[in-house]
Image (cartoon, rainbow, N blue to C red):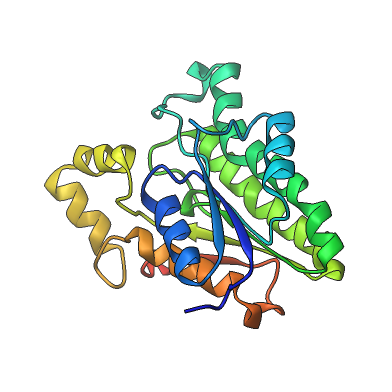
Length: 232
């Protein structure tokens, strides 16, 4: 496929799982893909992000996938420190703002751009692991998606969001899955209409849709890719 031939993409959080699958998909669509993870770029550092984007040149497709729970587990609200709160919010929401801000001038100049934010089902409901900052940051990504779609639409730039369900995609989700035990795992799968967990490629397929030239009249949307879990 060559649907994005000649386009340049930046995908954050590509060390494994969903980010890696998205980057692979964009390459199969013909895009030149720049992959970054926490070992290559601190996406919570605005100056570092601006420098990186300036060095690689014009970005046509941005996928804000970096984030996660940053090694935290659910605790009662009164036990959550300000530093722990900021760590998760910065990794998920501030990073999305900084990367979007960095690529916007070039997209405006070229009159074309695709921005896809990877939120979570937690942003539309609650965090299954009880991490308040994660649910809040992921909801914030959805709000930022709507606001930037409204602002950037006149310049030929679309901004959309994907809210994945439970995807076994990295060591964190694997540990979470194992912690449920057989009964908990069966209950989780039983609440999914198609009766299976998600795969990274399922999320990449959503990005393919939003990044396509044919999707130029789709913006400000949040697509739940969760096997039908959100309908229950």
